[in-house]
Image (cartoon, rainbow, N blue to C red; front, side, top):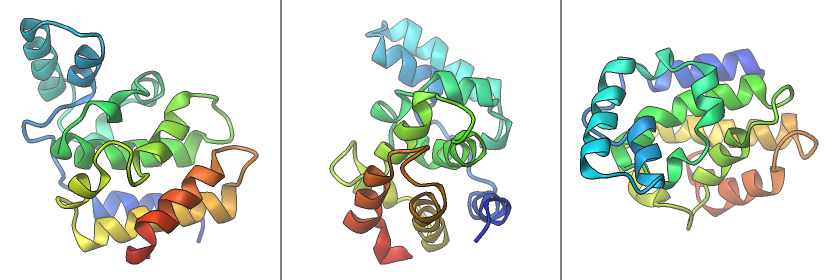
Length: 162
């Protein structure tokens, strides 16, 4: 398995996934900052208008918003996880962003609501996440990412789809 093929697999598996009223990056940030209902509504609107698809989210946004998965709902998770996975694959050896390990931690059972998030995923999407974790463990390793957490995520939940 090579990185380019895995990126194509992620793109295909999550093609057409929309935020669909879920909690996105900007709204999650407002929740993290204990923002008001008005600020949250403004951020929700910004999430809905800043980009139509997850593929449009710029890498600098993904890099800077690393607490997102602490505050998203299932729709937000499904919309954002492919963008963060691809960002992780492209940047894990070049960027020290906390978003890289945060993506791995978002997939750990017991962290956030992985089982609830996974309920909205298709079998193909679950398999793709398992392959993403396998790639990180086998091809990227401890030098660049928290491979222990990736392994725990894979063995603790996602391996049933691999």
